[in-house]
Length: 83
Image 1 (cartoon, rainbow, N blue to C red):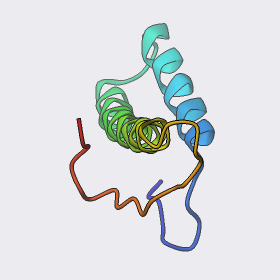
Image 2: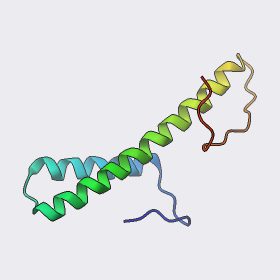
Image 3: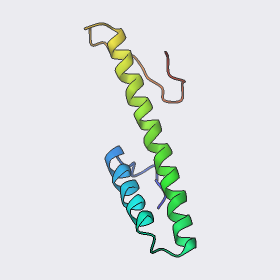
């Protein structure tokens, strides 16, 4: 199930799918090929969720650096986090 430009999925939707995959893999009733497919999908979802969390953390850090003034500044996810 590939993500398309027309229908971006929320963090929560991706996390729910990842949890479902983990549950299926933990049950251990899957044929090897299906388990590998799910594992690959799970790894991709894990990476997408990690990136979204890093982006959210960076946005929070930007706001906190402004010190009690809520002045959001442009944030570009492709830029590395400022530490």
